[in-house]
Amino acid sequence: MRILALVSQKGGSGKTTLAVHLAVAAGQAGERVVLLDTDPQASARAWAQVRSQPQPLVLGTQPQALPQQLAGLDATLVVIDTAPHTAVLLPTVAAVATALLLPCRPTAFDLAAVPATVALARAAHTPTAFVLTACPARAPEVADAAQALTAHGLPVAPVRIGERRAYARAVAGGAAVTEFEPQGKAAQEITALWRWVAKQLLAGQGAHR
Image (cartoon, rainbow, N blue to C red; front, side, top):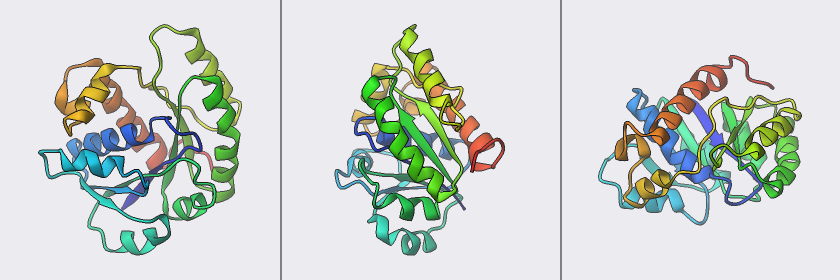
């Protein structure tokens, strides 16, 4: 069983959006997926409540209870959605994770929050990578942000998640973009990101420890 945790010290970075979309994409690729929602806001659980499909299974849990929760799961992939400002609890999450994915929007505030998250990830010695989220089309700030993230010595996913209405529309109906608009650009992004994460991060190829 592989465990992917979405982590960021900055609120609004896109963790929950990525968590539910990667969970669905992985399921569509043949994985048996469980999504663990450790965020007190319970956004992933709210999404699951309006969802018409039984998969992925979405469960709420406390970060401290993750080892016990994981022991009882029948899954090939577990996706963990975390709350912002989880500095105290990140070591617990990182200790059970196969890999960490750090979402970051291409803004000055988001980039300023990155060093704290990177320090915690390095201390955990867990394979870690960045992914840029909510990227405006043809904005020079996106390339600048990618360069800034590269300076931290961690891989940056080559797939950038665009600032698209399809994500909000899909989530509002309890779906993912790969279900809501299978041929759309957002669906293509998510499918490509899942393939990259599965090959380069979860499989340990090219991941940094």
